[in-house]
Image (cartoon, rainbow, N blue to C red):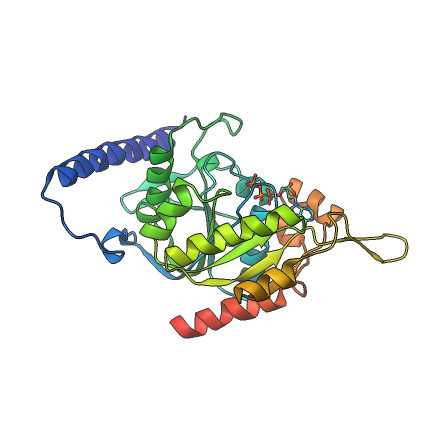
Length: 295
Ligand SMILES: Nc1ncnc2c1ncn2[C@@H]1O[C@H](COP(=O)(O)OP(=O)(O)OP(=O)(O)O)[C@@H](O)[C@H]1O
């Protein structure tokens, strides 16, 4: 591990120990009333973030990181200042999609995210590890602590949008993010299989219970375009997303095809070259309306 990286990591560890002691002291005090606001973590003093948007999926492998990166790229192409907080600590895939390998260093302001050459700021556990193939085998509370530090110990600077790529499911990390970060809204990512619809409802219900706004749902792997005749092939069967969305009274923000060329571009770390602006035009509109609301 490089010296700077080691220092950033040691600071992270020291803070986690300190936080552990504080939690212990707190829990020994007389019970106090806990409000949703009192659980929010302060932003790093050198960060000024207008909108925090969570990207969630009830289940793994539906393309949540792909959608997170797509939204980030589209907003960056529109001229907004964008960051991605990769909260998928045990399965981080954002750095690879953007071809970034540099290690995060820190200074007096905190950890400094790595910028893609197009200017998207990224923080991910893989950018703190010397070996990207080393597994992260930590228990839930430690992982959740790291995610908090990606928020309050990272010097994000000025951002219009910070996208938080969550791990799949409704476990420790989504709970921590919803409780600790000022999430403006979430985008749910799903795929057409029927089972997934039930899982969408779980993600939706969790957001509702945490009083987080659901901006809408993006269906990924909706279809495959036949390279010969251009017909849509429904690889995973008929989509039920419109029905589920109207049942939950949420909007369908886009339907993305399985695009083999995009998969290759993502694998090669050239995500900025993927063209899916039209497919995500409604999602972009909804995100932009948030920018106007909050500016
Ligand atoms: N619409 C798409 N077209 C082509 N490839 C895609 C598409 N969506 C996702 N992929 C590819 O599928 C793989 C899995 O996607 P991704 O990592 O986004 O899934 P995920 O839901 O974030 O997974 P996990 O839940 O395990 O974190 C990646 O290699 C990604 O580039």
